[in-house]
Amino acid sequence: MAHKPQKYELGLIGYPIHASLSPKIHKAALEETGLAGHYRLYPVPPGEPHALADMLERVRAGEIHGLNVTIPHKQAVIPLLDELSETAAAIGAVNTISLKNGQLRGDNTDAQGFWHDLQNLLREDKMGHKPSQPPPGPPQALILGAGGAARAVAYALLQNQWTVTVAARRFEQAQSLANHYACHNTRQAPRISSSKYQASQLADLLPALSLLVNATPVGMKAHAPGSPWPEGLPLPPMAAVYDLIYNPPRTHLMRDAELAGLRVRGGMGMLVEQALIAFEIWTGRKLPSSFMV
Image 1 (cartoon, rainbow, N blue to C red):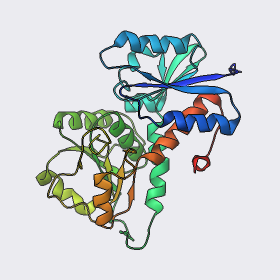
Image 2 (cartoon, rainbow, N blue to C red):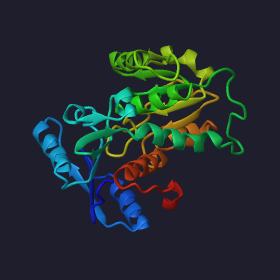
Image 3 (cartoon, rainbow, N blue to C red):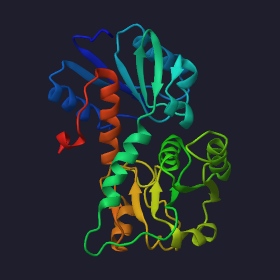
């Protein structure tokens, strides 16, 4: 049986991370389970591979018992790890690091966290929100962005038999993501394609969409202002809109979607869900997301 530390030292590596809500979530989780410990922020700027490697060595030495990983290190940490979970290997990105039997292990809890919280959105059918019935045929999603978060979202949807289109301002990045899953085993042959991030290219997709996901930083507080949706293009009329951004709680895209009568959800639920899955990996203690309410 793995040794359980008397006091958990946990944290987050990334840059910038000063506005992260992860310390609040994990502090609450430690208190709820009666475990002693801290969750700290460890800013590691890009272009400092030695600093990144040093942080992982602190996990290997037992000084730190678990780390979350965020932008820009979700892929950069992979060569520094000993093993990956099946999900992390399939996605090609890591957001959770632990030490198992002396081996540094990388996991990805973003996909499962997103899928869990997405169910809350898809169950919503409030008065004035549409659709009461989804578009016919297999559910279809459009993901804006092609970074680590988009990879996790695409994986979750493909594993649950959705058809996915990825659009990114750098078309080659969207192509790379689509090709990655086209070459990787999923429960069945993946239904994923790429599209240019242009109104003329996206317009034909809109009537069949059940879901629009923003996996770009556009709309994030202290980042790129505005909406990631192409100007002049109407929102998909029958889709739910999920914005992975959680700060601010309501983004420009979310406000526009609400005005269009669409079901809308921000990224706070996914943030909590993925955090609690990571917490269980580190401590063995499972908590429902409802304890944060």
